[in-house]
Structure formats: structure tokens, C-alpha cells
Amino acid sequence: MNENSDLNIDNCQRGMTLIELLVVILIAGILTGWGVSHWHLYQQALRLEHTAQQLLAFLIRLQADANWRNRTALLWFKTGDPWCIGSGVPPPDCASAESDRYLPYYRDVLLSAYTDKEIGFYGVRNNAQAGHIVLSNGAGSLRLVLSAKGRLRVCSERKNARGIALCQL
Image (cartoon, rainbow, N blue to C red; front, top):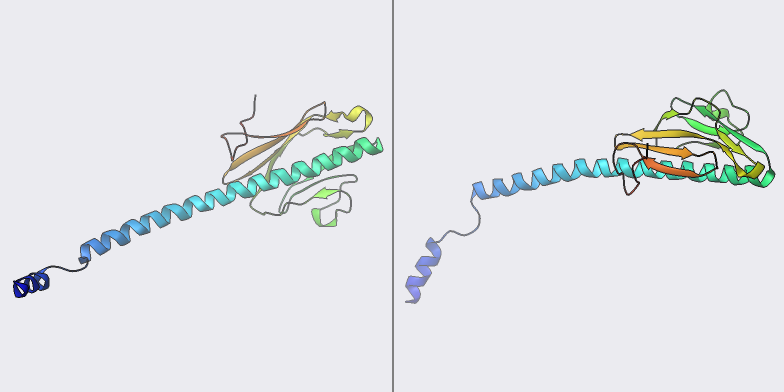
């Protein structure tokens, strides 16, 4: 009986066939490709949100300074690569800006649009000249909105991006 069972064990197949191995490798490759592409999109969304939050913090600091010093702080914009936003005397380019300025850390986030008129903060009663700034990259676009009462907020233009709500029209 023992010999018979040993014969059956030797005749049985052990391990995986080549086809099974190829199917496993194919499935692993598809899942890896899908994961890498979504990871790249996730990283773009993080960079866009991080840049918008940094710019929002810069604007809040500028607003608080204008209110504290009771002075006007109007914004200037320099487009190109790299782009920058600041207050005070507009420089010829971003590298030579000496006053308060914001220079983005991530190069893939672009300054897509902004209000053409003057926007900024007035120290009197903490009011502001209303306007908007739009930042975008491959993950979407975020709008920073400045209301006339001095309220600053961030909203998403096309779709909810990382918990940031859609802009109200």
C-alpha cells in the first residue's frame, strides 16, 4: 500500500504550469501599470493642493500685514517659468523680486488665470479688492477666491479635488 501511494505522488503534477505562471505575471503587470499611473495622478493632485495652500497662506499673511500696518497691499503677477505673485513694486522678473513674493515650489503647477484688474488688500476695515487666481496642472485646477470683504477661500473648478469643494458660480 505504501508503494502504491508513492507511485501516485511521483506521477502527480507538482508546482505551476507555464501558462499559469504567465497569467499570474500578466495580472501582476496590469495591476502594477494601473497603480503607477494612478500614483502619478495622485502625486499631481497633492502638488496642486500643496501649492494652492501655500499661496493661500502667503495671501493671508499679506492680508494680516496690510491690516496691522493699515496700508494697501496690491498684488502683481509674473507669468512664465517660474511664475510668481507678490506685493509692492513689480520687478522685471521673479528672480529679482525683493519685496513680498510667492514663488511656487513645484514646476508642474501653472498660474493659469487671474483677475485682470488690481486685486489686493486694504488696511482700512480689512477690506479687499475682489478677484481670483487659478492654479492648474494635469490633475485639475484650483481657484483661489478673494472676496470684497477680505475672505479668502480655495475651490475646485471642474471636479472635487482631494476634498476641496466645487466653485459656486
